[in-house]
Amino acid sequence: MGDASPPAKTTRDIEGSLQAQRKKRARTSDAAPLGIPVISLKPFIEGGDEGKAKVAKEWDRACREVGFLTVVDHGVPAAVIEEMWEQTIAFFDRPLEAKRGVPMTDDYPYGYQGMGMENLEASLDGEKSKPGDIKEMFNMCLGTGVANDSELPTPRWPEGSAAFEAAWSEYYAALAALSSKLYRVCALALGLSEEWFEPKTSRHRNALRAINYPEQRTPPLPGQLRASMHTDYGALTILRLGGQHSGGLQVMGTLGSWVDVDTGGQDAFVINLGDLMARWTNDRWLSTPHRVINPPDEKAAMARRQSIAYFCNVNMDTSVECIPTCEGEGGAKYEPIVAGEHLMRKHSAVVAGKLCYNDK
Image (cartoon, rainbow, N blue to C red):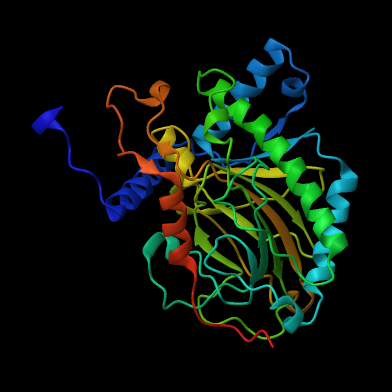
């Protein structure tokens, strides 16, 4: 469009615009307390057009108003989930030196990260001087299994972990199948063909991350949380909550208030949208700030918590730009961005680079 084209937005412009959109929606939202919608996937999985349309409508509303939801009747076998928990907890119970045997490297997102080595809030403001989050993690990416995918680094597993590797591989495959269903729901909810996202996820870099939040036997540093405020980076996140103290996850609601997320003991996954999905949909859908707060003082010494997050990252070379059905009268708000470059920029911002917590 020649001289009439707007200048490309800088990273800070983009982040500021996303935050402004969220604040605007908070001000114009209903005064009723924010609720986390619960959606059954059964009508969609059964395949009827009417059922698919029902789920897509519910999904669109949840993504417009909250950006977080809970799915039930998801189809992931209970035995796969249980074995994943068992092997993951056993890994985190290993001595620290054994866990450090597979450290996180620059080949995101693989390996172990210790206490305080990440500050998620830095992904929003770039400030690395804040104390690191009170958690340890193990990360793995197995990709899609596409032949000759030379860009996918070889997975590195902890020593003596055949059962761990088997459990993680099976869970990863089950969540990859679930993510494919969710992308089809997204497509229909946006008025697209059901297969619209498939070419953009055929060589995905979905990342499986287990997180251990230990009992807090010493007080946190000022301002330090289990997971500081952040938005997720990619398209979708599929989260499983667990541990002796599964509470603590909070979503930013109306006028900046914080709302607790609780699955109520259901066989459910918590789903939230990431920044790339918000950009794709031109802010029609929300990438909602969230955090994990510390347990109450009277419970802190016993309140161990775990979660397992499956981050749905699209093909690294995908250009994310406004979906045609989301342009509206004002057109696209954001310049196209390459998914892999966005992901690595965010990852680099949150790595604290030094221990800010005594994990010994």
